Length: 199
Image 1 (cartoon, rainbow, N blue to C red):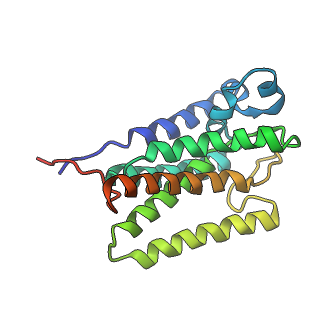
Image 2: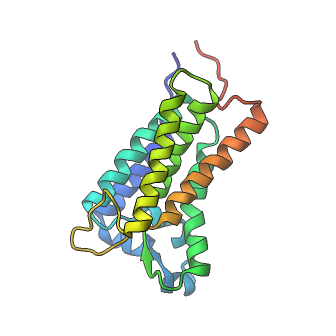
């Protein structure tokens, strides 16, 4: 059996843990509207590495770690695209249309994208648990809708720092997963798995 090391997942989660451990890094990497408009464009892509509470970091790392590990272990192609879209799209949209949003951060878009990509990959392989994977996708959509209506995160707690859920970030994860799956299906004819030899 060929064991695949989840390099991208470990890099993203490990980087987020490192940034949380050293708060001055978070101050340099968070989406900060004024800093971006002053020329610090890297913040559009590094914001997912910044978390505002231990609960925020814990939930995001747990979900991304588990789903990303599974995606990479199964060899689903184009996970990098899921991560790229989920990391970059929200900041680029917010800088254009949300002048009221001063600061944001968190891996929740990548976590949502990883779960969505795992579910879509399993749906396309026509395995025995297709109803389960569809149910997980629907539950994720329900969670996002609940956060929109309540305007608070359902799981992460602020630990004294006020923050709210940003549904666009989660939607970007879904969009990244859909783009990656579409690319895979078009290029490999309904097979989301990367074909590799085993010894």
